[in-house]
Length: 358
Image (cartoon, rainbow, N blue to C red; front, side, top):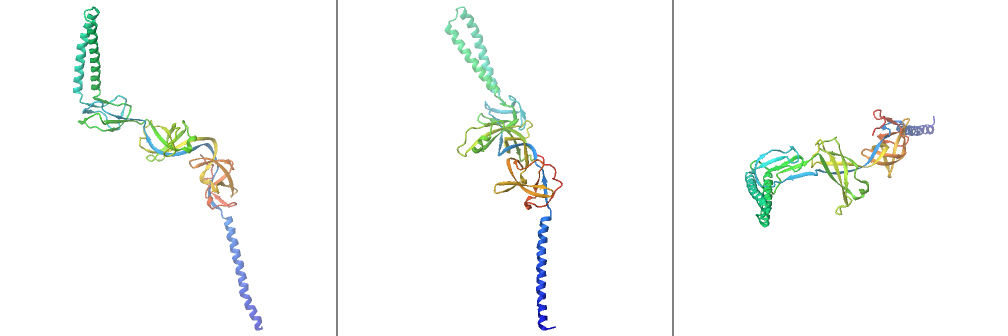
């Protein structure tokens, strides 16, 4: 073989190898792209649900009691008997404590004796006046004295009764501020009675929401001390005026607390339902893909997904209303749509392929 011919053959070998290498690389890229389009993406799916949906507004505040009364002694004295403790339930008029009322009792008895004496004298003068034996002036003067003694006796009797400290309202003894043997005056509260059967909450709401609220709207609340439990409430008043300091108005909610589970002072989270949509189509808000303020979902059919635009309505908790774009039989991706695009093949989770419930 000639030398030139040998050189050409040797030079052609790398070229052929290079071409073969390029063909193998191209085939690898194509295979990878093919794998991307055919490998199913695991997702969780579900169907729209039908239920009554409420547009809600959430607010936080501290629970209060409208029936909260300090018990202030009407007369001073030494505490000689305590009949209740904090946490006891009392009725209106029940005796909470007694003061040493001996002096007041004696004053009452003295006033009663004076009254009986003058009353007897007045009855004799009345008979004499009818017979003309006593002047009208003398009779009238005795009558005025009798009226004054009646008032004195009633006042002393009232003061003696005040030596028994009574509950002004029915409720629970929320505070006892006196001790046995303590001399107390009339300037401070000896007890505090709180009616916890009905509680109130004063909700501060931005003025932009004013037209949404009205008396009669239902609400629910939860407290940190009882996680997982909710309580019913109702909006009973909505203030028509705006607080110029912060641009808010006040809505008052009434809480039925007949079982006594809640207590004044608890911090609560309220959810007020101000608008009801009956038999609304709902889906989990997590299923929605938002882009450029447009909402869409991935609909699953025959193992492939299609991105479909939808129009949404009100939201309540984790659910959102669908007004347009879906039917009740459309299966949608609930979890896992972050890795999807139109035409992606999916592997639906068998645990969540049932119809969603509201």
